[in-house]
Length: 444
Image 1: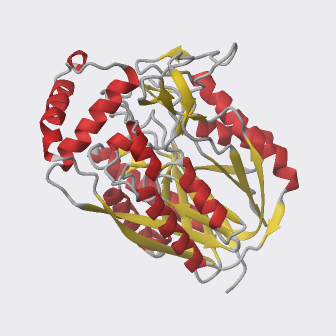
Image 2: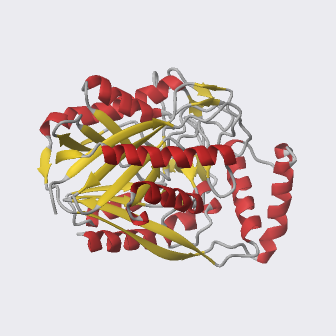
Image 3: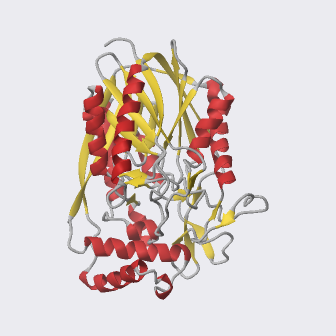
């Protein structure tokens, strides 16, 4: 094993106007661009083994398509498929490349750009040293699931709704910073936080607040390069349900009872970056050693409906697809929940009985990135970080796949949008924690 090296690259992945924008249960097509989408790549090498970690400004890449891209990167760069780690930031103002969405022309363009950015980052490899620190960014992420007076569990029930009894769960406000100081090249700063980038809405392309994390870091520290990796964000977003005076500045009330705004996304990005900047000069050295990577596949039972549930599900889906949501009987996020649940039931009425999920991990020295192919709840990240043997563990959502929500066991009993729409049977979150920890321990 020779000296540890790291490389950086960035490419533009902004799609053409007219492309479908993913993220809601309403049709949207791109009418303009607020800011460009990027794929940022970290390459690491110990002289014998090389891995690449990409963070792309996309809502998702489905597991099947991600495997195709990983094969492309492997062939272009001469590294194993298991060494290719592709994460999505989950912006809701960009395209998706998933099971049932996507544009074939853009899909092909994206594959080329991901292979390009990986090769560019490997070409940029330079001797490097590691250090890390942690801070907190309060009032950026908020729990989005609430218990209501009528006993229901609602996601995003509206700001200052008098029928709210209590939030379900707690946020993880931890900001993790990995500094990669290089000899002969710009420093690379990795920032990790966890909440939904669904702050802007509308039909204009934007990378949402993760872009402003990168931009703020790079403006504050001229010469450095910043990559943002989103964490376990499945049950948190930007909605301050108990907003006070000033909290809703520069925001509008959107169709799904959620307040959104471009300026608020800038505020969130600056706040997360500010937390990283408060500890930037006080990082602790980390061992920068052997580069390791692995993938573990786990089978998860399907959340299939009971036969008697299917007719009503088919009725709801038919009404929604016909543009007759007013006949379904719900509004706002409750409507989204009912439609999503019905869609899940219709799709799974004839199977399959289980799904295979790819868990991936890349480790170098005393750092490990833990990849989950979908939207894990906050407690999954907590479980992985608290039990990992590495000094710095960075759990990431939507890595090498986008297969759905992963609620905790109790959340299925409570209900709510994520649990009711999830393709996976109760126990999926606990299986992901167990499988991820087993994979991480193999790499230690």
